[in-house]
Amino acid sequence: MELLYFGDKGWGDELFFATLMTIAVSITAMIIGFIFAALFTPLKLSNNKFLNSIGNAYTTVIRGVPELLVIYLFFFGGSGAIMFVASIFGYNDYIEINAFLTGSFSIGIISGAYSTEVFRGALQSIDKGQFEAAKVLGFNKYIYFFKIILPQMLRLAIPNLSNVWQITLKDTSLISVTGLVEIMRQSYIAAGSTRDPLFFYSFAAVLYLMLTFLSMQLLNRLETKYSKGY
Amino acid sequence: MDIELMINSFPKLLNATLITLKLLSVSLILGLFIGLGFAILRMNNNKLINKFAYGYSYIFRGTPLLVQIFIIYFGLGQIEYLRTTFLWVVLKEPYWCAIIAFSLNTGAYTSEILRSAFQTIKLGYLEAGKSLGIPSKIIFTKIQIPIAIKQSLPAYGNEIILMLKGTSLASTVTLMDLTGVAKYIISTTFKPVEVFIVAGGIYLFMTFIIHNVIKYLEKKYGFQT
Image (cartoon, rainbow over all chains, first blue to last red; front, side, top):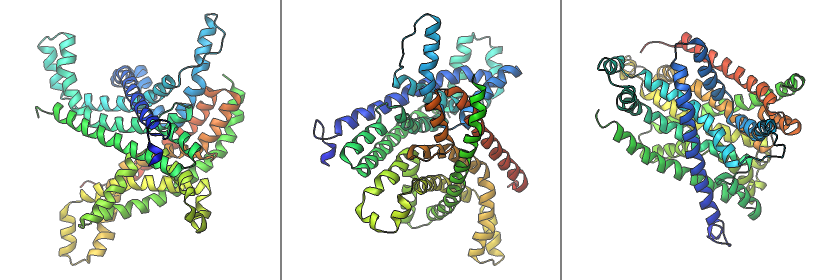
């Protein structure tokens, strides 16, 4: 237990901040994922064959390729791509991108593919009559989407989105390979310097269990809130 | 685009795919037995046994696979007692550690899939079996298990694909599987996009095959209940 003391003696404070980092990366990745989902869901539902295939390619490739490979692509390729763009503007120094940004971006792209599928499924299972009625009643686009379609979609999407959140939370452990100090990386460092890997990795498992347990409690509450009318 | 690198790295990556497939098939077979065992325990009426099986699947589904591999590979070696037993022969090999972690992980998911499949079997089938005087053991092996397998095929297909992606984590414990070799080539040539296209293509091809095999099995063995 001494190993978990706060301050210089133990690893308590380091692990606490690492947990906060995991939460921060997960939330950022989830938001980035929503942005991707907002871009690709319309493509997947579009009647245009070309746009449709772009949407399908995104979800198929990302869901069919290991997360670790995607992370390596952005970790090794990210700074190269940015340096290439910078060199066009005449900036030739080495640019290193922030590990937090690469990490959240690569996890975000992965979680975006899952979110896209969730939103597509939710939109498709809304009764067609709802779309038609909203159009016939002449609501403007804002009310049409935000007041009529979105609330119904969220009710159907939230249970599956909480699954996506779980996947995203667990995927953040993989960005420890890029050196970002989250739970996994901090446990790795602590295990290395104390030679007590069993304790620290088990403690990491407990931290992840706590995070999944607590977030499930919150999400279940959200779920009951959105399905109030039913 | 460095086409030459892509062509040169293809045989190396294909070779590494064999390790990925080996890891996948061995852990899926072991995981199926573990999953079936825990699914049966989950349906036990004894509360303690039930809680134990639920706890197992909760812990393995609630923590990242990476943590599980690290606990088994780095953590268990720390216990002095284990080093003296025959288990050490297994636990010092990263290959077997990865397989243990993958089997336990996929076993947890499989137990949930099978449990829900068992629970959706209509009572009428069991009652029909009972009224025909079939012993309960045979009802279980000849009626419940075949129906459960058929019903769990779509979910199990997803689990196979998730596990295929999961095997990429073997590269974190020094195994040179498809992702491991891909990472090695990327870090020596600094051409991530080309290697990603080749390695990702191989993974996509495998998911494509698995997806279609499962679809075929569903069509062949599926029935309306």
